[in-house]
Image (cartoon, rainbow, N blue to C red):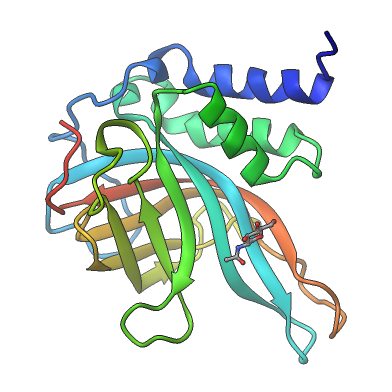
Length: 231
Ligand SMILES: *[C@@H]1O[C@H](CO)[C@@H](O)[C@H](O)[C@H]1NC(C)=O
């Protein structure tokens, strides 16, 4: 049998992300408090999911020679059971370092596919973009938990968000903005926050006509409210 180093790396990544506390998911988060910088409004509903995500931010090169955002795709892992442990504050660094260390030819989709093969119980779902369901044009972010875990098979276990606020990452310009989004469709959440971001920023300039790029990132996503809760 030929086990490629690549495959082993991905399995190692999934084991690290899954172990040890992440193998148990669905811990009580009702008392969890998100810490937000000034500029992001506090949530108005109780927390429903707390996750760490790895994925890519996509960009297209505009005629002005600057990259503009063109969606993202990411995989979300339950970190509810890390609450109150030292690992909670640093999990996005661990996730980002593993993700960055994988060769660039290993796409987020490939990692997601392999993680699903490993049936990691801590996977909550996926984050990706769809055509804005309200206006029918432009892209809207979606968090989709319909194919994983406790919410698998529930067609309403998703939320489509609209950006309601954002601030530069407190950690510096190399990290994508922290965001506050409001749910506009689906029953998974009423409010979504992207915080503790790592990476994901495009180069400052591009050559007009050049191909779209994908930049690796990690972050936490906190979901609040909604009617589909984990515990
Ligand atoms: C982002 O790029 C990845 C490839 O890196 C692609 O699979 C995905 O569909 C893209 N998503 C969007 C919204 O463009």
